[in-house]
Image 1: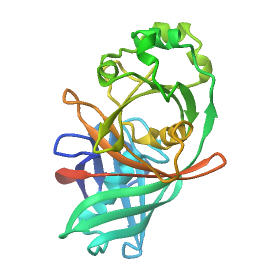
Image 2 (image 1 turned 90 degrees about the vertical axis):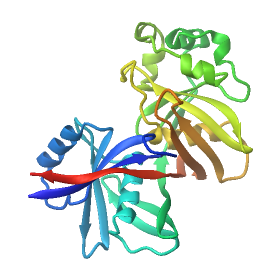
Image 3 (image 1 turned 60 degrees about the vertical axis):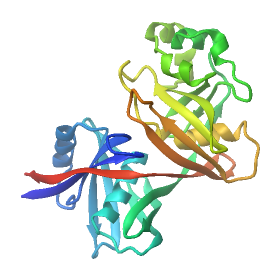
Length: 301
């Protein structure tokens, strides 16, 4: 038995940037055990398995990493949208094409944009319930955890806050990109502080810059669950980040912004996001970006 697969750079402006996602096109007949083994074999950030039924009128995906399955993944969803279009699995026309992709968390509204028969943009809409907690460690504690000076965490218009979507994120503004790049996570300082009491298992650092008069954020994810050498993708944190920004930026919705992870020294990811609506604790967020085909081949099972 053979299964086709592709490897896609997601949220990438050019080849060999963004996050590497494997997409297996023939996932309909694979068992849970086989899917997990394939994901372990690829050992990428995520491996996606496409499932198509009723002449492609019903589209669904399942998402794994090398250890377990996930109910949802932003990078996985973008990779699936791109692959469905690039591999001509769905019928498309010039302009925006809307369809529904079913994941373990539910149905996801997706859009792929076509120009001159090429995929030029991919996006989806996520609906998430948020929990916001204004209790955070002190600036002195946070500075020790991040091995920076407290004044580097004093940013006009923003301050640290805990926002939980599927996981709790501790959002911390920093003064500039140089500080963002210089941060080193100190686990001993984390354990000795009040931070574990927040139940946050990820720290989302960000700083602002001006890019064509747009809201543009340079971002970085780190924390007790990541290796000091990791530079984790930030896509899953974007709904929570949107909710965080809504606490400080007072303007009519949609609130559109760009979030960049990485730098010239690391793989750059660029995410185009928009906070579309807020109803009590629920937010609706659009998340989009480019994707690039890197490789394709067959699995021999």
